[in-house]
Image (tube, rainbow, N blue to C red):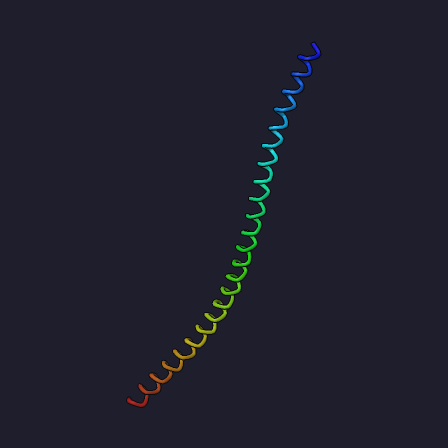
Length: 88
């Protein structure tokens, strides 16, 4: 009777040990994957910040460009109007 109990607990212990080993391997793999993903997210976050900065610069330059084009068009229209008045 004691030998059967001993055998039962020995087998159960071995099964739980293999499960623990598998869980440990899985846990290590998942921790490694999470760590790699955290590094990748950091890189992506940095690139996103750089893109925001570039977008702000382009937006600012576009506003300046529009203003200058509008001023140039006003000068062109004014020059054409003056030329038409002189020719009349």
